Amino acid sequence: MKRIAVVTGASSGLGREFVKLLEQEQGIQEIWLIARSKDKLSEMAQKSGGRMRAVPLDLSVHENIQKLGELLKAEQVSVRYLVNNAGYGKFGAYSDLSAEQSRNMIDLNISGVVETGLVCLPSMHRGSRILNIASLASTAPLPYLNIYAATKAFVRNYSRALNIELKPRGISVTAVCPGWMDTGFIANAQTGAKDSPTVFAAITKPDVVAAKALRDAKCGRELSVYGIFPKLTYAAAKLLPQQFIMRSWMMMQNMKSR
Ligand SMILES: NC(=O)c1ccc[n+]([C@@H]2O[C@H](COP(=O)([O-])OP(=O)(O)OC[C@H]3O[C@@H](n4cnc5c(N)ncnc54)[C@H](OP(=O)(O)O)[C@@H]3O)[C@@H](O)[C@H]2O)c1
Image (cartoon, rainbow, N blue to C red; front, side):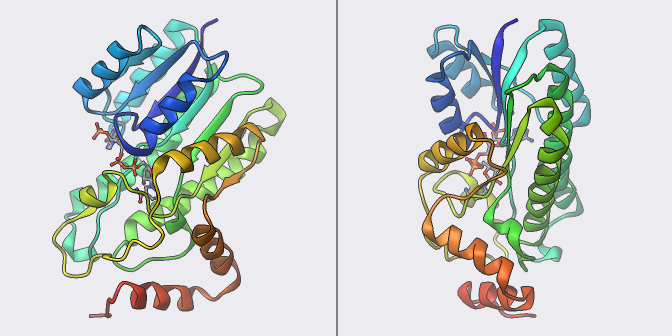
């Protein structure tokens, strides 16, 4: 059985860093690259000399994830790693986003993560690892990053409970909670809305986040938080009232309630 890793959102940012690390992993024979940008994925696969396979899919569409499941079944592979990383956010108030934008964010960040996991699980075995990319934004309700933060709260909570459910099968789930990272995320999140985050405290490169996440997953840890500022924020969010966290976020971002 061919041992593979599946990385979603592999075409840029954090996903691309996971691909680089998994390429060096002993025992991974092929990496399946998933994102919408067919050209970028094909170029990566071509350069890898047969080590990677481009699987261009829009994961916000339920039927596409089912197709991935059928492909995994037909190829009879063993998925050693699933990095559920594809996701995005949009800055602004509820009224700055169209219903379509809000729904699509939920479709990709929540349903995409759950369904991709479900179609991979039949091909996963003892020792397989799932890394679900949540965010530090998962730790509190965040006005003007509202839906995104709520989708990531789902991912974090879902992943931690799933980790317990999968223990008897010897499969671990790690919820990865990065702070701000220097990727395409921030530019893609801009909507031109008046109330948008502009302060990206302790922004970091994605390579160190991916390396820590992979180390944590290998140790079977249920959570991965990289860096001092994110760790302190994570701890504060557990200890302090959420009203206080929300007010601090608004002050830091120089936002006012309308
Ligand atoms: N950057 C940050 O500050 C930050 C902080 C915390 C958490 N995160 C999380 O980290 C993860 C990776 O984001 P990033 O920072 O690396 O941003 P990024 O550079 O924008 O990467 C996002 C990736 O997701 C893919 N993607 C977007 N929509 C998709 C869809 N419908 N179907 C399939 N793939 C899709 C993109 O590829 P295509 O456009 O080719 O589809 C791209 O490969 C996300 O889940 C994000 O929420 C980011």
